[in-house]
Image (cartoon, rainbow, N blue to C red; front, top):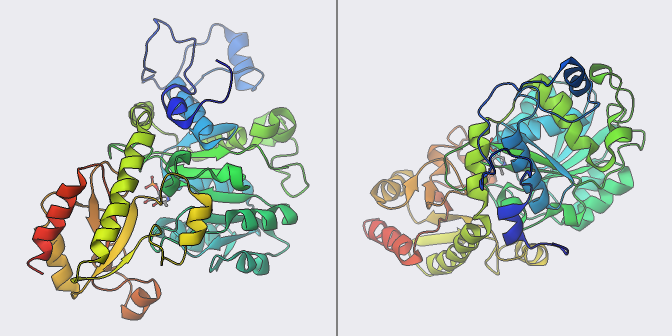
Length: 425
Ligand SMILES: Cc1ncc(COP(=O)(O)O)c(C=O)c1O
């Protein structure tokens, strides 16, 4: 077929391999650790990266490769590298770009796991990170000669801050460094495609909306194919690589050099491959991504407006609401909605809020987002329990705050569950 296919079509078809034996309709699970060679010369060529082929599932696997091609198509990139988790996709991305002595500028509105990764683990590896409030000016001011990347989330996980992607990517390209965007809350490109707004590498947790069923942990990085890795700042990509038979990734692979290097060096050496079974389960999920996410975002919008009118609810924090500080930016960049996660603050103390959670019958109490089910968690008692009152306040969290990830259930049933529990608050 000629012409550009739509997201809904790509999520079912993109990346399917044509050479699967026996003609399966669905990409099968290649549940194998290693692959047979035809002869020694073929084995030698594959090892030397002179020809494509599978050797060992830590390095590549046909099920995983279908997933990589599909997400790359959905995100509008040139190639993807799937890994064991969303966290691994960030780790491999930062680690491939930065060397000891380098520096990253990151928006402070971040998933806690990423904050720890940059604030602790990468500092131990000799890579410094400055956290900024998120405006384009704050990024520009924090740049240093040794800065090698800027990093933002599509919708900051937990305060729902939406960055001005065009302006920040402009600052990055002027500085000759890549913009990395964690698009986990952007639903693999359905809500937002960072690559169309100057992002150079996009990371996704596959565990959330892309998989959707809450069965499997996985992650992926997508090469947007739009960065000049040969600008002199990244010799690890644009010079002969000692641990890859002297290969120059940039010269050989061009607009997919970063994804190839992340796999051939990053995943090979750090070992964080995704299992073929998880890749298969996530491929099952991705086929319905747009349908699920649209329903969840429609439910979230209706729920946010409904909750705002309830006297026992002190506040609702959702970028879809007019008065949210990021509403205008979200309207500028997002299509189809405003995401499916919000936080609400009840008029109650820590114990009363915990009581509200304990009485819920339909809504699942757990630490995740992007599941088909509606999920709730009380940050002050769990994800942010280590913070004192002042720190909680600085993070925009109070004892009565709850995070809600809205699912695909009938909206009336979600409201009814909240209503029955609120009655006793
Ligand atoms: C925005 C964001 N990025 C990355 C991750 C990490 O993903 P994973 O749990 O798959 O490692 C999470 C997890 O909640 C997240 O919310």
